[in-house]
Length: 433
Image 1 (cartoon, rainbow, N blue to C red):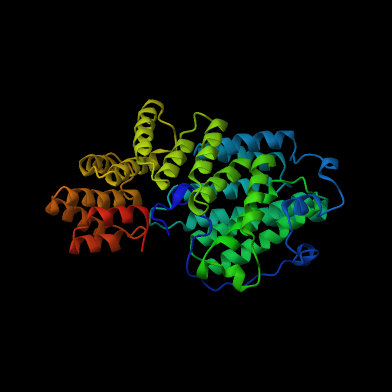
Image 2: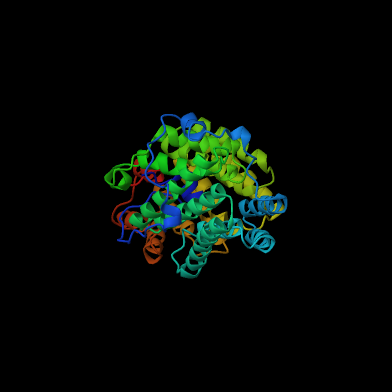
């Protein structure tokens, strides 16, 4: 597994890369959901899935809309969320509930917002029970309101879409918490409901994002992570990619999320850096002033080992950050210093690298971040390359006193015993054992 866990691990807090699992009961769907949710054969092609699943053509159905006023608030809230302006996003999403208390849309938006809030601090060892309770409450409210809506005449395709999306995002949450079996149960339940939604309405393209995530990773993940294979559920890597692209190209509300996920797939799994960077440019074009998207570009370049470009982009990023002071990004600023320092280290420029790591440590307003732990570890590496063993040991000891993040203590302990050479340092930059 790559140490540079790619865009989604540093950027979206990973979806499915978890090991180990805890027992969980597989709650059965109530009768109103269970009807028609028998396992359907996998589509032979994306066109079969989208166009052949129903006799009603997508052209005959209205475009996916929650109503003009709700759509407008949803769009504004999503834009704020991706700018990490979470308080503004929450106001918009709560406004959706006020506009239509019978719609599950606002509750699902709040659940997604909790996910994004958590993702900004996944490198901090802390008690997130309050945030998790908020997340689960909003996801469960989405499911509850969707079920009630079915009884009152809510369009079934919308009800199944939001229900399936809520189960899916719960699965993603459990996966990041390394509750793999729960993640599978929720994810598979969400997959069935999303399939039902597109069977009823092939034009509901946003549903294909959740389907694509499940299909891709059920086929792509190695070894013990392929729990679905053990339970006789087959994924399809190619179909998953096509489904994600369909959500990106034609989705109404989830197209940005689909592009982020596609960048993650192209970067980490498909090893297609050129394709990933092309998608990053398209992502940036949707909101040119959004610096969070620029952070994503830097992390994609890191994963692609485009070291000189990383250094250039980090310098430009910091200049613009100081000029614009965008809200929400302060927590991730140390990641810029870490990325630039890593690039210098990879280019065998230990003196320059040490300076970047020092700035990352001293200039942060969030000293408990895992990125700071890695600034100490990497500065120790740089100092060892400079022959300053005593100073390097001080950094390694600091690493051992901090919370373990990724393999920080393993590598800190190893470096205390023996100074790593450049080859070993580069290997650690890019992967774990």
